[in-house]
Image (cartoon, rainbow, N blue to C red; front, top):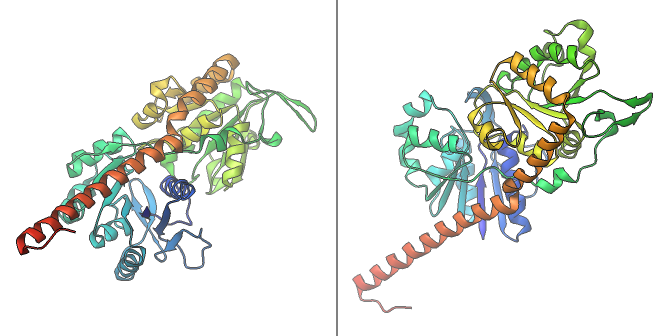
Amino acid sequence: MRIGIVCPYSWDVPGGVQFHIRDLAEYFIRLGHEVSVLAPADDDTPLPPYVVSAGRAVPVPYNGSVARLNFGFLSAARVRRWLHDGEFDVIHIHEPTSPSLGLLACWAASGPIVATFHTSNPRSRAMIAAYAILQAALEKISARIAVSEYARRTLVEHLGGDAVVIPNGVDVDFFARAEPKLAWQGGGARGSVEGGGGRRTGETIGFIGRIDEPRKGLPVLMKALPKILAERPDARLLVAGRGDEKEAVETLPKELRSRVEFLGMISDEDKARFLRSIDLYVAPNTGGESFGIILVEAMSAGAPVLASDLPAFAQVLDQGAAGELFTNEDADALAEAAVRLLGDPERLARLSRRGSAHVRRFDWSTVGADILSVYETVTAGAAAVATDERSGLRARFGLARD
């Protein structure tokens, strides 16, 4: 099958949607399908062979964050050229309502179109206001996918129609087989390690996310950290992600700042090693999340998870059976839960086992097969419509059948 996938956000600025599209494309390529991804990217950015640049993106405030999007006459021309050259059996557009390539592709494409909706925003005035503009494009979509029940609800409430829920996918084994890194390990439930100065006994708490994006919740974790360290004096926090590190620790007492180590941006391989090394992963995100891919990655690596009780996070964590939940934006609740968990190695070990079992439903072997079934359904439907149209023309003009 010839598959065209449209990414709305800049390929060279990592994010959950980009990772989802990358992994989906590579999964289909391994199965023998021909895949091309159209994405915003600087023209000098090294890209995988299956990615086609639609030109540079510009930062735009979107869904409580800053998204790098691509829109305009030049972009529209590149979209049309990509569609013409690709001769795709199916076009898969991600976030077709965002003012980027997805909407342009929806307007320009013909044939079967599948759309995936990632956004969860129950009060999107922009989406409501843009409904009249979006309607013509949305009517061309053959099948809709939402990555969670909350993304589906946003779609239904703002745009009408419905969608099948297929979650984001993860290569579970990639994280499960990663080797822990000695320098990142603590001495909690996942095993004490020998350091250069002897046995390390303190626990390691982990956080991955954009440091300077408030909805990722690092300020909430920083507010909780003094109470955590007061009860667990040998613990430390490892932070991976881009942003202003000095600003991130401004609220911490100076004597505690050395207990926070910033790793900057890390590779996929190091992210897997990071999650395999820590004793507790904390996701203090405050809103705007429709799924929670980092939770799935942490569970895949066997890391016990403590997360804010956002509805999407609760769903990913099986309503608290596969990970602990605390009251959103409540630093005291976060600190209390973290101290309790770090003091209970057996509870951490149980969470690790439950998470590792639960996460299998998010593996690409399941998620990719479900998405492929949607492709096959819409392409079969398009073929049936084309056959009916040809039969109607033959009957109208008295032509013989093939």
